[in-house]
Length: 197
Image 1 (tube, rainbow, N blue to C red):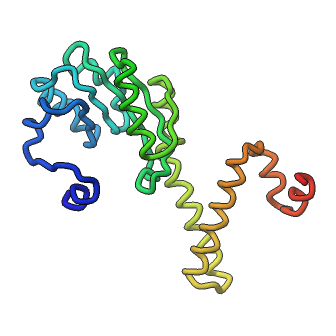
Image 2: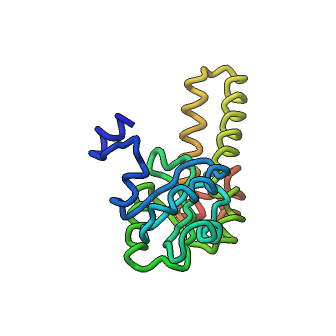
Image 3: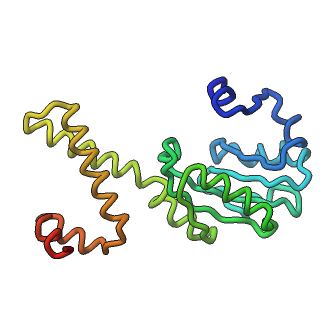
């Protein structure tokens, strides 16, 4: 908390309830299971502030059911790449979110990079893809590093080789080239280069 306060010129408080009435936006970053009790606590202090959560499964309908009538709500599903401002975040807004709220939501989302607004159902369905899938990529990376080490390179070399390979592959995906074309060309990079030029 000290690091955040000094690095971003923000105020910290241990009396968050007293701070709610002076805030326009409340962003909840607690485990999903804690939300229902937390909603009950904050409801007393709400006066139409925008309430945002980043907890899995806590969609706008759930928030609206537990917060005072008319409360604007938003559900964001970032991934761990938010730590380096590279998240792909899906989000869904409640029925009381207006354009002024959307401006704040977009400002928050842009701070951690890419975002896409979806329906509640689609955010639920895609959480495993945009939210949790990085863990599978890390597992894949770990396996590749272990394979590289088995061929006699150092752990540092293995990590470097795999990390840069993945970064380059991501850059290729970012060109918009169909993924099946990239996959088919992956075994013969010179064939892809010649065909592309």
